[in-house]
Length: 127
Image (spheres, rainbow, N blue to C red):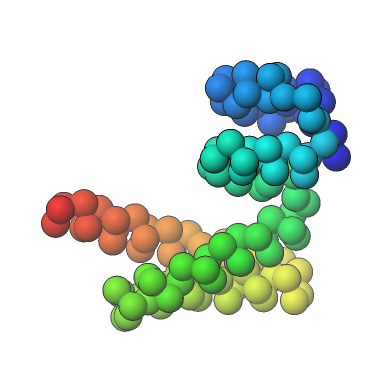
């Protein structure tokens, strides 16, 4: 997929990102992601990847990313199962994309988000 002026206007990247992109020769999505990684702009690369994926791919990407760090969370907060439940609910949508599974996943994600934020707040408070 080529990143066109219209695509940029539709997805509204930050001003700095637009400036960086305008200084680049490459416009093909994967090549732009590679250039971002090379320039150590990993957060921008992640932003772009998430917008280049379709809905199912974004779910798979989110599950993958969450699974990379869930053990760290569970090691520190072994009694808090909400993030793991959100991952499993998202996997359920990937297996059977039904209205019920989507609703379950949305609820699980909603329940898990305050959990992670509360733990971050507590860690900041203790620091």
